[in-house]
Each structure stands twice: as structure tokens, then as C-alpha cells.
Length: 348
Image 1 (spheres, one colour):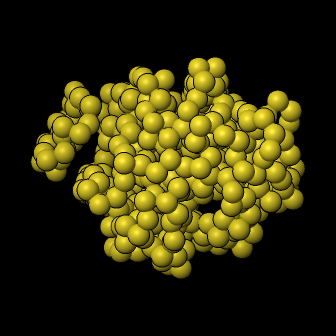
Image 2 (tube, rainbow, N blue to C red):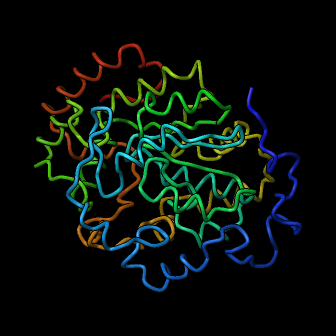
């Protein structure tokens, strides 16, 4: 059973508003978040900010690697203190947590949930960056973003942490976890290209070198296999719902309806239509609040490739050689033999 959030019951207007929802007239950003001044500075000078405000001093951590619980994380976004704070975070029963391994559809789910809770309205999705609407628990910027969020609006969080790190905190509440998983070969390819533009990630060599490191779990954020297995194993103790990237892509309406069922939200057909229209790869690629174009090229160099690169299922086939595919399949079938039935992925 899931707890129906108060903002979704019977299509009632969220408590922070007494007007029609979704609004028929524009809403000031400060209605939802109290950091309008900070965000205005982002919009005026997008090339120098990653969050509401990014001190230049953080640039000195671009080449820092933090090791927490034996896993490497980029020091530009993580510190020992920020990750320890994530383990002690006090979830509320109505919270929603997006859990993913990198490059598995995090930004997509952040956009979809924003639009679901906004009943299709574009106000938040087009005025607040995705990382501020659903901030990462483990990031250095988390407390800054949390302090400026309106506590009466739905709390959506994101994490790339493995399950065992967050399990103690999650077990203390009825938080709803949405675990988004993607075909690991597409994850690998996307992560490889992301390393080319993310200045805070190490150079792991050519594609063949990267594949070897990925299969060994010797990449930032750890092993994909361990990450997926851990979150699947935690489902008996925590309200974890598996959503696949492939389902979102192939059956978007049905998957959005399933998300609404999980969250206890009710949408009109026209609201669903608005969500479907505005969470497409094309729409998000043109939305500066979702495509990370606000981030400085000193941090994320999109002159070398786009953050939202293709959003394509099966792109791995354009990268893997027959030998690489055979090697991957052998390791995958060994490591995932007890989990294969959970996922709709073809290895060929």
C-alpha cells in the first residue's frame, strides 16, 4: 500500500495556493520557492552557475575524487560531509525519491514528476532547473536548495547512491522510491560520452578501456550491477517501484498512468497530453531548465557534446564490437542471473 500525498487527493489544490490548479494566470516563482533572487542571478548569467549560486571556490574541487564506502564520487559535487548527511536525512512519508545509476533517466523522471504534480502546467518546469526541483541528497548544494524550497509543495529528491548507504534512513519512513533502470549497455555508452564533457570526471581512455572499467565497477559511482541489485533487494523493506527507461520510451502514457497510480495522483486526459508533449526528448532538449545549458562550460563542456545526447534505445549497437558484446554478455549473465526476469532487455 502507498500513502496518498495530500497534494494529490481528489485533485485538491495544494495548500500553498487557493487558486485554480493548474493556474490559468502566470504564477510568480516565489510562490513555490523562496530563492527567487538567487535564481534570477542564474538566469541573468547562466554560464557561471550550476545551482542557484555556485561559488567559484568550488572549482578547486574539479579534480578531487571522494571515496565513500569504498566508492568513488566526483569531489566537485560531493564531500564526506554531504554524503554522511544524506545517510542521516529524515524522510517524510509523503516524500518521493528518484533513485538511479547515472545516465539511466534521472533528468527525464525529474521532468515527468514535476509535470505530474503540476497537472501539466509548465510554470515550474520552465522556470526552475531540474536539479533544484528534485535535488540530489548527497550533493554539496543540497542544504542550500532545501532551505529555499517551499515546504508545502511536494518534496522530490534524487540520488545516485547505492541502496545500502541510504537504507537506514529510508526504513524509518514510508517514502516512495522510484528506481529508474536502463539497459546497461546504453548506460555504458551514455556514461562514456558524459565523461567527455564533464570536467569533474576522470579520463578513462577509449571506449574499450571504459568498457573494461565499467564491467569491473571501477568508475565513479561504483558498479552498475551492484547498484541495481542492491535497490532490487531492498524492495521487501522499502516502498521501491521499478520503472524502466525502455517503458518510459515505448509506452509513455501507460507508464505515466502507472506513476500516477503509485503516487495517488489523478490526471485529466488533457493534463496527460500536456505532460506527454513536454517530457519528450525534443521538448526537454530545448528547455534550458532541463538540458543543463545553464551550467558553465568550465564544468560541463557542451561544445564537445550535449548533456541530452540522443535519448535513444539501443544506441549501444552503434558502439559495441562483436567481441565487446560477447564479453559484456558473459559478465552480465553471470552477475545478473538472479535478476534477469525483472528487466525487459535483450542482450543482442
